[in-house]
Image (cartoon, rainbow, N blue to C red; front, side, top):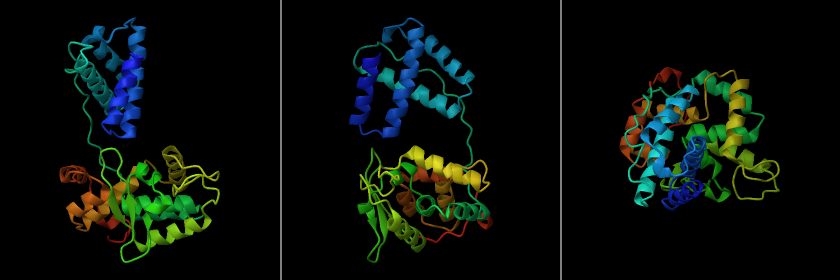
Length: 286
């Protein structure tokens, strides 16, 4: 099925699906292909619902999260739907496979003590300090942060903001910058390596673009040094959202800033957050 998988992922790219979605689906299908080959099945038309049920049962035994298994079911279902359109298979063997029940996990919100500890831990690392500040003060996604170019920063004039470029199905938008973020940005730009091989804002010592995995590793390390447990990079975005929700920021304006295309997405997301305003960091209001 190698060629079918390759063609399928190319179609996803043409449909402007997120690069993260394409990579995840490709890996999911390659894993499925390995399982099918072990079953001595070469033709996609010979893949049955029973085979897929056994496959997903095997995945559940590997202690994968329900969310991950659910995504793999989606990728398999979408792939066979694609094969149907090409008349490679007569029916979709994944269409009736049930998704595992996913628990609604309340997003982690950093307390004021945690926020201060994280900033103190990163204060001697200007680049990481800026990454933390931007994620916490703007609510942008880590992938969006990686793609920021120096030309996307608008730090003069009456309105100061980061221009987030269109990516996949997410439209472009302008995210306001407060004075606290601007100060750290200027500090970083003053020491940013001069050997840049790209106009990405965040680069390595060798001048290459900083990758998502580099940022996750760096922030995770700061969490550990600061003694902050069970926290992830995306919790900085959660804290931003919770802060503005608790202080009455207009939900339509907030939805636009955080990059949701539909207000219902914001409402559903925010509805899962338990807010304790006394424990939130003192962030500037937009």
